[in-house]
Length: 616
Ligand SMILES: O=C(O)c1ccc(O)c(O)c1
Ligand SMILES: [Mg+2]
Image: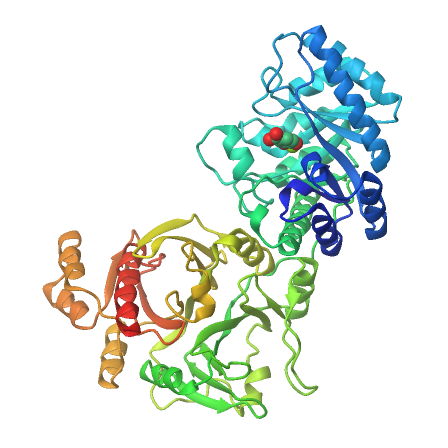
C-alpha cells in the first residue's frame, strides 16, 4: 500500500517535516499550502528535496471556497486557481484538493456546482492537473461523500474525481458502505483520520482532536475495507489536525503515523480475507499478533538496590541470585519475578525500567514489533545468554518478549537451576497483576497505539482521576483474558519532567495475592512502611458498604483499601515510594475485575501529602 501524510500533521518547518516523513518511511506527502507559503524554500527546491528524499508530492491542498458563487466571484476564483496550477507545475505536482465551499457559496444549486467545477477542470486540464473534490462535513451545501460523488459524476471530466476523508464521513455518523459502489478510478485520493468520541461541533472536533488510526473511536478497518472494495488502488494518506502533534517531536510523530497505517492495513487485510475479497491496495499483513500469557518479569533500575531489595523481602519475595556477569539481581515470589538492575543507573533512586511478557513465539512477536517500527533495545547479551527481543516504548520503558513457560532460559544466568525452587514458606504472592506506567501528556496517544499494537492488547474505556496535581487521565490496556494488564496514567501538564526528575509522579508494580491480610501482617512484622490512608476514607467505606465491623477495623489498621464490583471484592494496599516507584499488593476475590478506581484519588492525595512532606 502506498502511504502518504499531510504536512499539516507535523511540527517544524517544511524541510524538517519532509526529512521526518522520509526517515519514517512514508512514500509521499501532501503539501498543505500554508507550509509552503511560510517556507524559505522555493517550489523548485521543495521539488528537488522531495526527489532527493525519495518522496512523491501527492496532493496540493487545500483549495477552498470555489463553487456555488456569483459569476463575478467565479472569475476571481478561477484566477486564484490558475495561479495555484502554475505553482503546482513548478512543484511537479499533478493533483489538487478542492474542498466543498464552506464560506462563499450563496447559491444552492447542484447544476451550478457542476458547471463551475467543470470550468475549473478544463482550466486544470491545460496544466495536466487533476482535481479531487472533498465534501467537508461542515460544507455549506455539499457535506456528504454521496453528494460530492454525485457532483463529480455529473462534471464528467477525466480529471475530476473525489477525495474521501474518513473524518468527514464517520464524524457525521454516515455509513461508509456505499463507497464500495463508487468506481475506484473516480476516487482520486483517500485521507484517513481517527478521532476520540467527543460531543462537540464537528469543525472544532476536526481541527483540534483528530488522531492517527487506532488512537480514536472510528472503525477505520471497515472504512478502508469499503475503499478497497471500490477497486481504489491509489495512495492512502493521513490528514490529522491535532494540537498536540503540531507541537511534538516531528520524527516521533511521523513514526507514530506510519505505525498506525501499518497496523490498519494489516487489520483491513484480515477483514477482507475473512470476507474472501481481494484488493488492489496491496495491503501488507503483519505477523499475527500473539496473546501474551502473562508477565515474564518486571525490571527496576536503581543505583542502590538495598532499599528496593528490603521492600521486596518485606513483601515475601525471595532473593534468587545475582547475574553471573552484571550488577543485576533476581527476586521472585510465586510466579512474580522482579529484576533489580544497577547498570546505567547513576542518579536513579529507583524506577520501573522495563518488563517482559511471555508469548508462544518471541521471535515472531519481535518481527511484528519491527514492522510496527518499534525501536530495538541495544543488545547486551553474550552468545551463551538468552536473547529476548526487546523494544523501547514511547515512554522509554523497555519491553521484552520471552517464551511461554520458559523463564528457565534466562533464570539460569542468575544461578537458578530448578524453576520454582522450593522457598522456605510458600509465597503468598501469586503473580504480577498489572503495571502502572506514567505517560507524558504529549505522547499518551502514541503510547496507547504502541502498547496495543506491539503487545496486542485491547484498550478499555479510559477514566479520569482527580488528584492534587491535576486530573489524571488513566487508560487500561489488557489481553482479553487479563493475563497482562497495563494501566497508563497521563502525567498532569507541567509535571512531565517529574518522571525524569525521579520524583513526584511515580510508577508502580502491582502484585497479586490470595491472602492480603496475612501478607500485610507479615510485612508489618517485618517493619515495612505502608502508604498511610486517612481515617476519613474508612468512615466513607462504612457508609458506602455494609462491612463487618471487624473487617473494617482490620482494613484501617493495615491501611488497606476496599472496593466491590458485580463479581466480587477487591482489597489492596500501597507501599511507601522509593525514588520513582512503589508497589501495590492486590487481592481479587470472586473475580473482581477492576483496579479500585474509586480509591485512586485517595492514593494520589496520600502520596502527594507524603512526598511534599519528605521534600522539606
Ligand atoms: O479543516 C479544513 O479546512 C480542511 C482542509 C482540508 C481537508 O482535507 C480537510 O479534511 C479539512
Ligand atoms: Mg481532508
